Image (cartoon, rainbow, N blue to C red; front, side):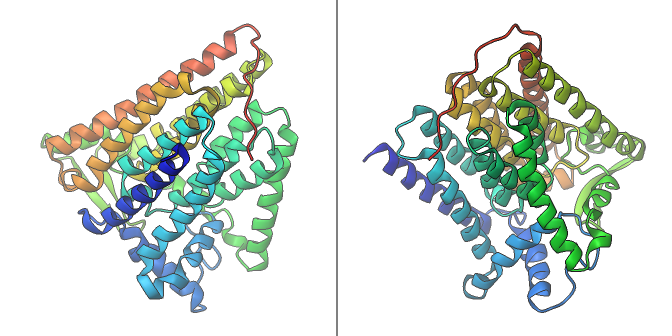
Length: 406
């Protein structure tokens, strides 16, 4: 069996296993598909209210597109299975571009890492909107140098599905020489999307997702929620895990929670600005794309994870695109971060869905594993921020070459 054939066999097996796990594992790991996505899609198809158009929505408006694309096949196999097919097809298209003929060791390593991450993260990485953005982000990162206009379009489109790929655009702006072309692509995509929303009558809600996210409390899995979750576990009468009916998620509640939630957005923005400035300084010091962009992109994404009031388990898939590109351009330097990300993925699947009942009613094992996962994210953030800082203070260094993408 050739290396390329082996990779594709692995691709099929991994996606089949993860898709099936969604039906078998506890705590509804694919619940969002049939409890939330399907009703939203059905309303659109039936001519009813459209989220993000007729009312403000927690997601950007382009997120409507995959919801509707998964709907036609749902009448035959069910919406959840249809969603899994859509994600698999998108991943397959980008996986083919990533590995090519499987002659590049970096690309083969990146392909293997991606499959391992999908398997270890489990069904939550497939049955969420974030799964649609990952292949778009991977392809956008691969094409930043050779095709910056298309990369800008792809990353902006992904941002209008879930906001996190904006971190990749920011890192690209710092690290790519043709930054105006990149921004042009992003601006073009944004203009088309906003234009369609305006024509559809959704002008009043075009940025509603920003307000919805800004007013949220502390989701139970978020790193910042750890002290309150541990307080609830240790029997504090002032702290508990509560269900937010308005946004359909579990949050920590009790003394001090509101005060912490009120400052988290400012801390996130402040940390992102500091890292962004370090990236620009690194460019001015001669840091090449291959050394700077993956580290800068992963650092900014980790800022979104570590300083976020929300800590949904699928956020771990945000880490994949920068690591995949890092392995493509410099696999030796990126083996360590890749291993850490895989560990974070398996810890995440153990917490959700396997042991999630022990988070909602705090139990020692589940809370400990979640805390270790969150500490791992913080450690990885410090590691990657150190890489960016070193590039910012280093003397001029030659850039590593980035291989062409077919």
